[in-house]
Amino acid sequence: SRNQQWVLPITVKRGDSASRIAAEHGSTLASIVKLNGGDLDRIFVGKTLYVMNHPRFQLAIRRRMRTADLTLNGKFFKRYDLSVSPGETGAFELPVKTRQFWKDMGVSFKPQDRAEIEMLMPPGSPVLVSEM
Image (cartoon, rainbow, N blue to C red):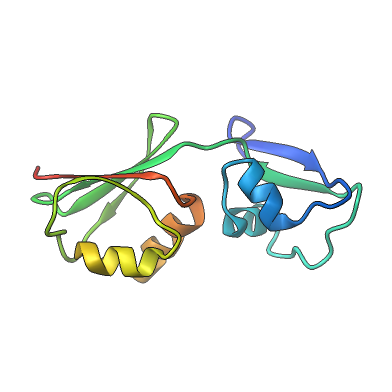
């Protein structure tokens, strides 16, 4: 279901690509694919696509609790359980190569949770790790 608060219909213009549209709207290519039924093979001028409307996701990881809370525009979105707690605390930015980042941080999500987080959070999104 498309929540109007977070989703914006856009019309494809000449020179647009799905990755360019994702970058312009602070989103990810994976989220655009998901919002548009999984098929972006046929992008053409005039087609309507749905994108997340400049989402600001942040992930707050709590070491002792072994949880990670995802917020969207400052509001709680979803909680994930961690099987392994990170070794380091601090503020980080999600890099382009997320798998290596999670490995280096010592964070272990369920595969489907990691895939969902990576679909929603574009590179540069804040990741905060606290001792709690």
